[in-house]
Length: 387
Ligand SMILES: [Zn+2]
Image (cartoon, rainbow, N blue to C red):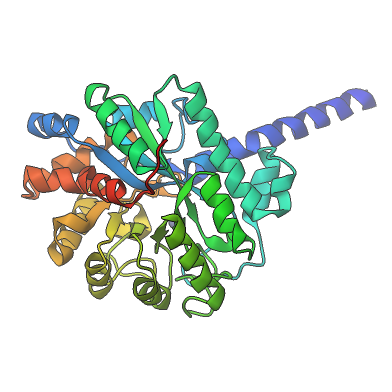
């Protein structure tokens, strides 16, 4: 009897261990139950003709196979195909603080360690943030290798051009670009920039939720800017041809990066203060400075980016950004699977095309916002390369 009880307890513990990451994922990455607007036939036809691109999703964090249509979260290849998404930036998260908030965090605690243990990541990832980044990047390459050509990881201008040409005749193809949230993942070592480049990363977010060795976060404690080490990191990134992402950066970090970094800059996922005030969102002046640098700004759909959840709020934010900087610098930056509550998953992006048309945007500008701008930006910004 005693032994039977012990077995039951053990089975419960083992089941809980395997189910915990699924439960956490399902609770943290949710979709609003509010019904979506009906998409007009005109919008549907336009959407099918678009090169759709999204600058930011954290799909790789949750242990879901990118190739399998999941019943939770927001992004996987089948749902990208359903949404006619050509290009998804897959960002990796390597450390977030306990009690994560938008105002004030330090980097002493580590939520991702628990996730790594629950998902049985390699031992090397338990204490090494760079190893966590490389491990998640490998998951995308592994999925691409198993995808029969459906998914391609893109790291060079040549690969991007080849992908665009192939996709013109096979619209089910999805391209992935690897990005990172926060350069604490360098573990304080300059040579880690090269390690990340070799692992396929092309877009580096300087900060995430806390100040790190490179720069200050919008959600940290110092509200300072870029450190001397950070300047060396930016130099190395520029030499390698990497893109800097200023999402989550403190205002001073944004200003200093724009002044210091001659290479390509994005803000991959953000809201705009003009429709939703908050420490996470960009002011009109910031929008203008980023556009003047040639940058692209990805507008998000989650509650803290738009203040309310719904297609209308997303459209308002996009239209506002376009009013401030014009249609050439605005893009989609969903933050899907970023521990976010979203109005739809990626299979329903046609509601944005529909909403923009209904708001009076021209089909040409819709084409730019939905992915044309990101396509042109990557075509010019990715490193040259023969493969
Ligand atoms: Zn983020």
